[in-house]
Image 1: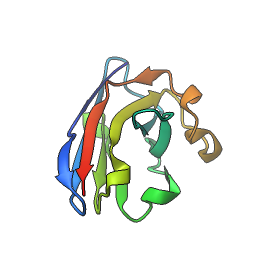
Image 2: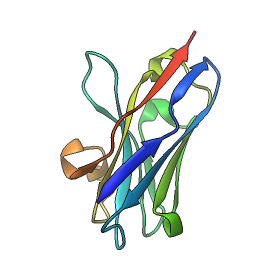
Image 3: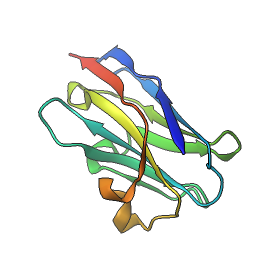
Length: 126
């Protein structure tokens, strides 16, 4: 499975961006896809995840109400709509995938995802 992420950029605080992640290769069947982010000098952290089969989602508390994860199963693509961005959201954003439908308690862990895309940089200026 290969993941291709896109959509990063630089915006002012309060602005919006939409990230996309498209899976190719062996990309059918039950899947969980997620977004993580990593700021300089910090560990990679969970942002949001979605279960392909039923659309069940999970969010990091600080992004609830501002970010929305969604999927297009026909296109094997997951989106992360990010609104009301603030400088603390600045990071490299990574999409990740696993060929199973994770339960919510597992979705936050980086170790559950064997497939990773390249990072896409999001910079929010104040």
